[in-house]
Image (cartoon, rainbow, N blue to C red; front, side, top):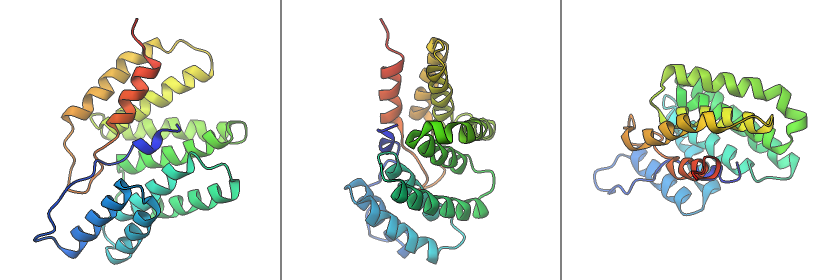
Length: 209
């Protein structure tokens, strides 16, 4: 999960000409994120969220940045603050967009950050919830690569943890990775990335002889 930061949206190069204030703000936030200024991007997404109360995307990205940055955080106080903020903004996104598979995946990732931090303390609490979130997201949108890959990656990781054979999961992981090439985002600023991490994970855990 250390490379989960790679599971981000693909950043668009969009001309500023003719853009609305919202589009300019979102484009700038993605540019900041792409250039390694994730906290500056999160702050901008937060300001956009305050101005665009009916749009789930800005709070979603505030949450996502805080979640991704939590996977390498070793200080529990900092981790707690980041994941609390992420949860607050995910709650805002959920209130705007019900039964949204992207939000369900982000919630699963948030719980996974807790498990990655301390599996003994948080594994039993969050592992069943993570599995359920991926199952729910998959029922809603099985062709979404972030949903399909997240689900099989979690299932495979669980099998690894219990010393089970992971080979049966590789076919599903290959199919999930293939979805990235065909998936069409639902809008200009909707999530669209994650393929780099998915391909790396596939190569790592499903090595072909």
